[in-house]
Image 1 (cartoon, one colour):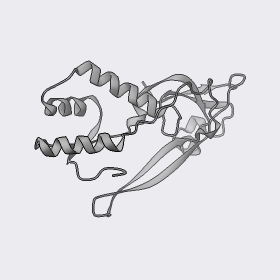
Image 2 (image 1 turned 60 degrees about the vertical axis):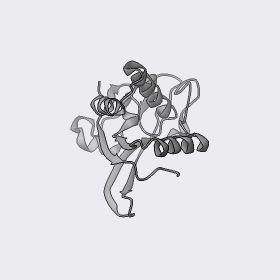
Image 3 (image 1 turned 180 degrees about the horizontal axis):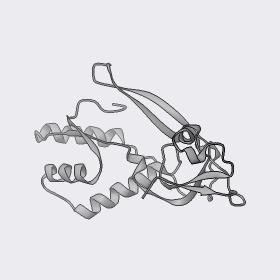
Image 4 (image 1 turned 180 degrees about the vertical axis):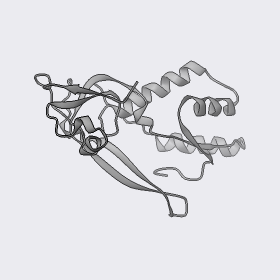
Length: 180
């Protein structure tokens, strides 16, 4: 399934076309050196309407006590703790809601049939960074995945299955934790 569908014609009554922006960032290693540059197309979510553009939101966070307990267990049982980065995580889950977005100028440059055409917009089929429901949709997908594989005694099996399920980078032993 593609991330979007090109729609021709007028937007449905009562619906807004959401705007997008290109966000450019640097990724750093543990020494603070730039290791790569990233570009990400994000929805400007301040225009999303509750009960039309989204129904539920969610942000997964870990309590500090839970994090400390996990680190203590890893140390006490001499476990290995690896770091996996799921690439474009929020772009994986399908959307439940109908979200419409103006075509970014950058996309018009790559799609010749869109140049100069009016009354054309995108219907998002999958989540996009910046959507209020994106973290929740990703969490639901991950939860469903872990439920499908059941509880495993050997974590390497789980890691292997994660790497097969989504495009990931295996970053090896964990060295850096965001916010900790």
